[in-house]
Length: 432
Image (cartoon, rainbow, N blue to C red; front, side):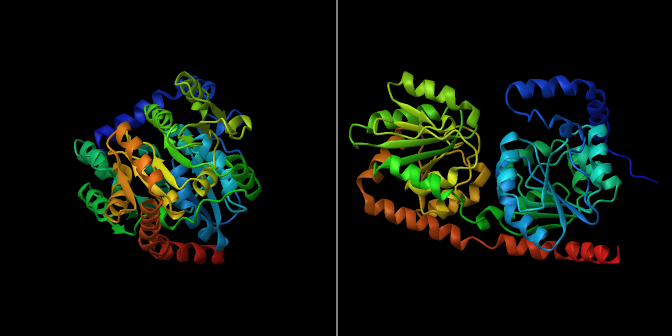
């Protein structure tokens, strides 16, 4: 007799099915806000934009840019074994990055919205042989649809924050019913493993953080040469992946320090590039000058803040900025990925809200490869100190790079844990 689902999951399926007619207005609204791709809206309804290739197909899903970047080396390894690979993401920025950086032959599609009809259409077309869900994007209809079709489901680079864990504890039957349908959870830390296990995941292995094994971000050499020439030896500070509420602190820091540190240039990279114009307006209101990369502008001698409001160019920024403030940390967002600037040996500053990468920030802080600042005043003070004392900044930068180099190995452990599943797919491919 089939297992009876918890009332919450049955209600969720009914509600999302009933709401299906409302999806198109929602997608149209998102399109007007630049959050959907105008030529690929059908993919969000589960309608495939491409034919399914014959044979075994491994499906890798990551919500957005961070998850996609973390999974890139793993995707490359799977593709190198001659498996077909389908990658799905849910944001326009991640789709743009996929177009630039996915290995040849890997298919990208937008993930369908989690409505039963859309999920069914997606799964019936693509018929994945194995599904890898990156980090924490666990949608009930998608999980249940895969389970009904006997598609093995594995979480890779899994994370579960303390806040999410506490929320799920109010619905123990719901989360247990979902996690029991996962074949395996490969998680980042021992704390993640304990949380997944406590909520009912039957098989959990701590493999480490895949983001530590991602190669340094690439950069176009021609564009890098142009940016270096435009900077012309000026002192540079970067504020990376900033969120609404943080740019004011960065702008104020530039305003306070520009007279002390002659020629100081701040490169500001908003987490959401579409906010570039509004950030430029805020810079002008503070009496400073800006240039926007999205308009093909380069900083000139009079530019105070260079707004790098483009996708996939952080590799350029980290190559020219020895001091990096990581955004999402002065506000209660959870912090953005500090591993990428650390691989370039940047001295890193961050705010107190870093739950998304708590273990990495803790290791960096302990090794004195990063430092926490409580507010805008602290950000100004520490940047001033590091601009003044290049030897101290150099020690911090060296500790930053050394720390992330020592913490690697997750890619090897993840690949080893997946090996039985990949061997089974190889046998099926051979028999077919």
